Amino acid sequence: MAKTWLITGTSTGFGHELAELLAQQSDVNLVATARNTDKLDYLDQYDHGQILKLELDVTKPEQIKEGVKQSLDKFGTIDVLDNNAGLGYFSTFEEADEQAVRYMFEVNVWGLSHMTQAVLPVMRQQNSGVILGVSSDAGLIGEASLSFYSGTKFAVEGLFESLAEEVKEDNIQVTLLEPSSFRTDWAGRSSQKKNTAFPKDYQVTDRALRTYTGLAGDEPGDPKAAAQLIYDQVTNHMDELPLHLPLGESAVRRAQYKFSDLADKFEQLTNLAAATDFSKGE
Ligand SMILES: NC(=O)c1ccc[n+]([C@@H]2O[C@H](COP(=O)([O-])OP(=O)(O)OC[C@H]3O[C@@H](n4cnc5c(N)ncnc54)[C@H](OP(=O)(O)O)[C@@H]3O)[C@@H](O)[C@H]2O)c1
View 1 (cartoon, rainbow, N blue to C red):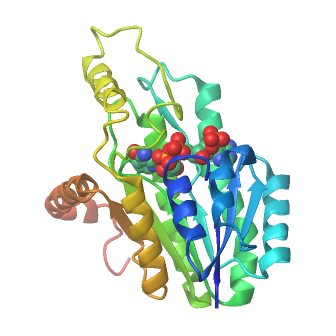
View 2: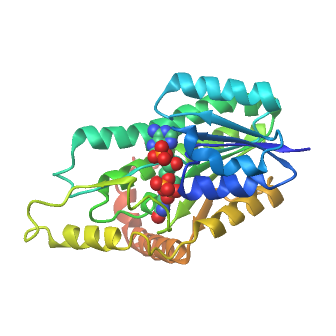
View 3: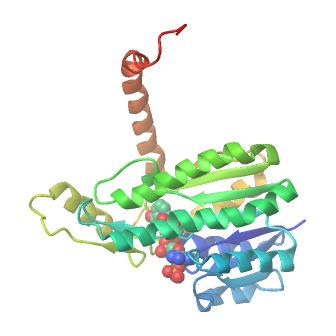
């Protein structure tokens, strides 16, 4: 039986590549959503009734509600939710524009949360489903110039690690996708950049910002390959998906370094940490 996928942010990047791949599969119904559905014309050539294009801004709860309703009206189920829509923000910590950063949290954290809350009752009722959260390697590792972006993705990691525990008895799988740098619009139009007013005093941040934004258009990660991998994993391993799925070699390497270093340091701190517990028997 065909599985219904609902994806947010399918105008460009990962969302576009995954939607285009899914549109060509015989066993998939696709709900492709975007803030502006004019950007989804690329799907028309594949449409034989199995595609629903919807206007959906993840910061608009009424559009989320309506999107879930229309998906169910047309296909009857939602089997896979891909929370893909997201933005970036580069600046020093203290120069970040609060309004812009709050908006990024609206999209990356609250958008993902509201989408997931809207779809969860459907999946609990079905007693099955897959929820993907596009996090980032920046959701595992902090980086100069990306503090608030990392803040959104660390939030996504915490939300979804906890959610995975809550829903496992209802046969719902949760997977955090953790890409490194991929060739999408993210580092370009989808990320605001605030060049520091103090380049001399903030060389580390300034260098990091220039490195990231200088990489735009030349990132090592291929979003088509990522789309294929996501489709294959979800289709072939629906009941045993990993909670964390890094994408791109550097995502794995950097996380391995961070967590093995952290494990070593925590080993050395075990006795110190234990000293703050009540003595046994108290
Ligand atoms: N590319 C990377 O290196 C990288 C690495 C790690 C994680 N990620 C994450 O990957 C996800 C997808 O980004 P991408 O790399 O594919 O970049 P992208 O090409 O810029 O795509 C971002 C998508 O999010 C959509 N979007 C933005 N705000 C939205 C809103 N309020 N409601 C609905 N959709 C919204 C955009 O739609 P519009 O066309 O309307 O702007 C666009 O479709 C993001 O969560 C990003 O943080 C990317």
